[in-house]
Length: 136
Image (cartoon, rainbow, N blue to C red):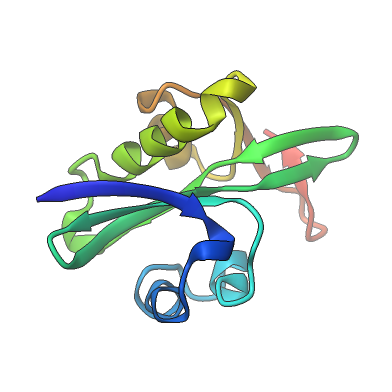
């Protein structure tokens, strides 16, 4: 049975944090480095029976003077293209982000599609070449 649970990052236990770091993040990504200590934001975890199929998360992020909710996700390679990321993102939308109007910052073209499928109004950001981000 597939289920999505949304919880504050501060409620994520140490074993789940390690699992996400070791198996469910892109090595070298910002979240890969921060998952064990990150306490702000929300995470939606999609479970297929006892296996984590994927997750989506959000936190506040500043782009210059503008403040955004972010949206990022990761899905096990063998479960990709099955709607897992959109399911997790829809959990975040339903639990919290619909109250904010559904506008989110995303950081890859693939996440634009996931965000739109889940009902969001995404804004794409890309690396600016100086270690920062700019609106695409």
